[in-house]
Amino acid sequence: MTTPPAVFCEPTATTPTIADEAPRSRRSLLRLAGAAAAGTAAATLLSSQRAAAAGSLTLDSIANTATSPTGLQVNGSAIPYGIAVTDNGLGAVPAEVGRPAVLGHAALDAFNQGVAGLLDSSSTSSANAAVKGYASFYGTGVVGIAEVDEGVVGRSRGATTRSIGVLGQGRIGVAGSGAEYGVSAYSEDPGGVAVLAGGKCGALRLTTWTGTPTERVEAHQANVLDNDDDHNLWWSYEAGTPGKWRKIAGPGTAGAFHPITPTRVYDSRKAGSTPTGVLATAAGPRTVSIKDGRDIGTGNVNAANVVAAQATAIAVNLTVTATAGSGYLTINPGGTTTVSASTINWSAPGLSLANGVILTINPATREVTVVPGGAGASTHFILDVTGYWR
Image (cartoon, rainbow, N blue to C red; front, side, top):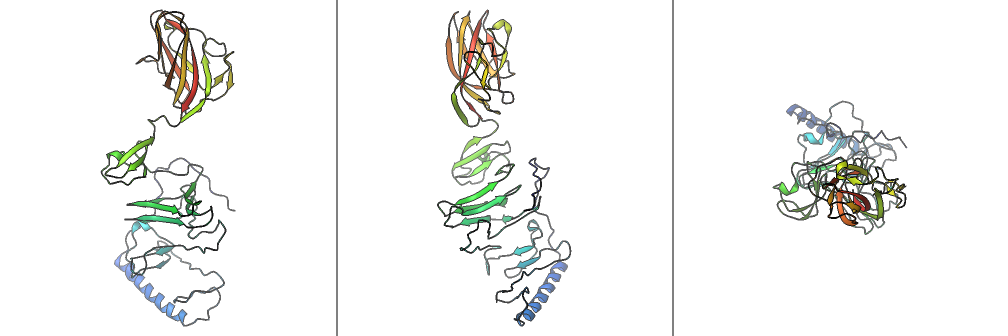
């Protein structure tokens, strides 16, 4: 097996696109007409010579039964296409088609499909494919461009659990563009897979679009996944213009909740928790780590990373004990010292109070900053995490 090229996950300055090609001139079309006439003459000649040697190509309605491969070598540059089957004449090839080696043209007269691949039902190997596109590095394996309906359609009717509608592998596994559907795939097999895509840099990438779906004026269908230019992910649950949407992820959301067994992550009374000691208003804010679980007797770390990297918030039980005076604590993401609301309050000395809260944290450091308040107030405090969002 050939070693695949190196994978580069970083986005490029521009997304690789199909090579542009200007529409052909009248002169080039005349040359193509002459080539077609020559091809007709060649077809007549070959069809009259049925006893062709193995490996030759017959050009009439009789199938080529050669026992060796038949190839077409095109020498030149900027050739519009290598070999084409056209439906009642082909005009200028649209620029977005590029320069294909094989071109199928359907005008919905003789043909209604540009290119289709049929795999015999007796094939049992998962390596077999009706249509397979292979591209080295920045090339594109299979391209589907649709002005109205589907760009690439994959349907699976197999009787095995390996039936796959569309399989995409590579830097970009499957790419489709179209006015309505870029890629359409479904599997009729109860154990089938409609779309299978995987890659070191991600299985599926959505291109950004201007504005949120709720702001757009186009009609949308239900059960559509979309995103916007602020990197938010949306799901439509009702069709309409623009339909009804739910934001399911994005930079401004907390992510999914991960409940954990209640775990102590800080105790100002224990030497193993640093910094340690009573927190007083006069001492000012204190920043503490909440990423590791700690022994309730010593305060030493006994479970690393109970709050996972890149977590955005925690569900935590905050306890104050051995209070002095009357005061409050405000708990902010690590590094933030401003006070806009209190997290817990006490009104007398010698109290032990608890409050279950949800706190935002600094996702880069997994720290919180505790700000004390109240004239002459001080307290010990304890943090027990019950879950986190990421």
